[in-house]
Length: 199
Length: 242
Image 1 (cartoon, chains in turn purple, blue):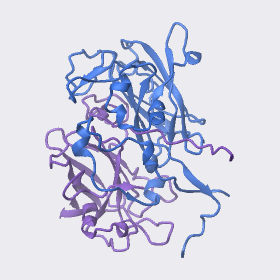
Image 2: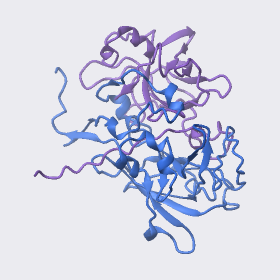
Image 3: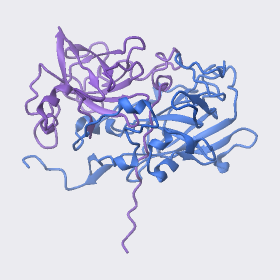
Image 4: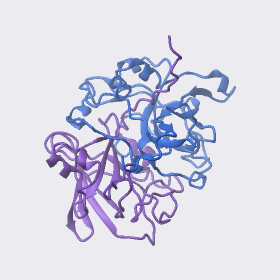
């Protein structure tokens, strides 16, 4: 016999379902003014330091169809790589955004500030990136991934370095499509499947 | 001084399968390729914080919050309550919990729900609260109805409340569902069945809690939630140069 190992397993996930917007984005669900202040409507405020950018994209299923019901959350630091709550953070960056695929076109838009690089425990910094968490009907555990940028130096990023099949690195890199404008598509399955993270 | 280390890796055995054919929508929405496993970094170990000023007085009262207190919702009055803990058994204080649900007839107030059960003019179906310093929370609501959904020929969702939790870091982010003790539809539900570990599914079923029920007012259901924990060690401070 040994001492009992007292450990509480994490509660199991369940799908967010098709009506996730009621709870997390009530205005999108058709219920405006439910709360006096909705959470995650924008990750930045007036006076933000750095470059304001726009990222557009879609979430595609294994058949190539763009999901109309996907909801995404993004989390990021400010332009200097400092997260909200840490010392010296830009007070105009909350860092959290909730955005949904358009119910007609399936396209999403994230308007935010270009994040700075952040240190890792092991010396090499992570290249500028935005963490994403994707939920929808049919997704049983929220999918984690990241947006990196093609106009940044990603060569030493410790996460991208771990991707064995090098062409798959591209699935995490937003493409520049205009002045301060990027495209980032997420493919849940099949050709060009996005690298999802267990992190 | 014990430092907060990386997040404890997720034990995927404790979670649903991504691909579960009886839940048809999962077939084309589940990744085929393996997830990339890696130790957490700052993007996962930090997270948003929410002040009490964001939360309105009725936000955790779904019986009254849609009408701003003017008229109560129809249905069986219940209190859902419990604690948010981490895998180390420590309370998670001041974390945001958000819930959403169908009304007592099984209808959601969402532009895409066309179920023939009527909307309740006094019920919106969402609420939010922050846990207190002991990780404890409460919601007052009505018991949601079961409802049919398009999947196999005749699938019904058991009564359930959706729950979203942050914890203190983005890597702890979790959405789950609470079911109700004694509901025979749980064992017929392909979404519940995506969880292959029976004790993990049982942990999503809230027991009736008479001790916290209020006589002549509401029944209580207890629902505790466990989020990912972090390694705590004094041996992880100086890894530069390794």
